[in-house]
Image (cartoon, rainbow, N blue to C red; front, side, top):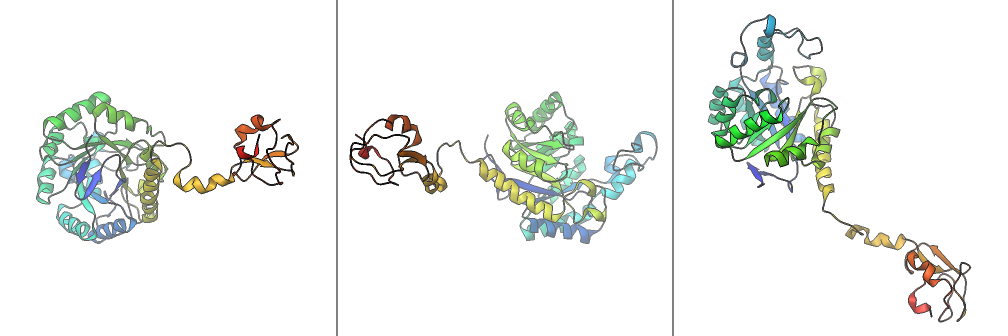
Length: 345
């Protein structure tokens, strides 16, 4: 698989992780707060900030009962109608350019998740560098085809999708013009199944990252070991401020840790290697080796009384201990001398 270019960043196995801060609805309907989130994200060291582009009317019908009402008591949004939820969470389209410009000024890649075809048309006017498809939309093939037709890199979250559904999605995207595809393993619980990442890479011959909704950074950092090079996490200024997604969003100090630790994890992968590394060469001296532990005369026999396996490591390796036992000293040897073949008959 070739690396994928998103603005001035490359995505690939030998590239540092590309971290995306997802604003979602954490602006709480304040443009100033949205801009503060952008600035805070830039300070954490992430490479990108992502929005969501929709309106309540492009998402659902303005109804408040039956299927359009969230009655699940375990839901973060219990007690709301879908329409009211999306009214609360959406990012006004007239804010987008201001947010994009702020990201540009601060060196962040800015892109978005469109939820219908009209959002794609709008985002094209802003010259977005790539698109993200949400898990709930990964079976929306008309939207997939619309985004793919832009021929820009596509990130598709795979939450809830079966292999058969993902096959349809990937086929539709590629047939419609997508050449740079990244699937995102989507997690929302501790049972994250990160081993799926390399399996998806092989199955669909594409790069695979992580869209992580778990708390903390452990799952995201671990995903780097399995090949994830894009990691997306929801981001807010403070969870205590509330908001539709604040409960599973990261605060700035946590995002900073993710940026740093994911890069450490990536660097730690290195290559397949055995033996002392360059940095360990000087420590070889602290291994054990054979030393003469008593003064010896020429002809004395090496035995447990006059040879020990001790530190430091300038003498013969311990594996030669049995070979040395019973042989004779070639010359006089002082206590504390590292034993070498030149001292043995």
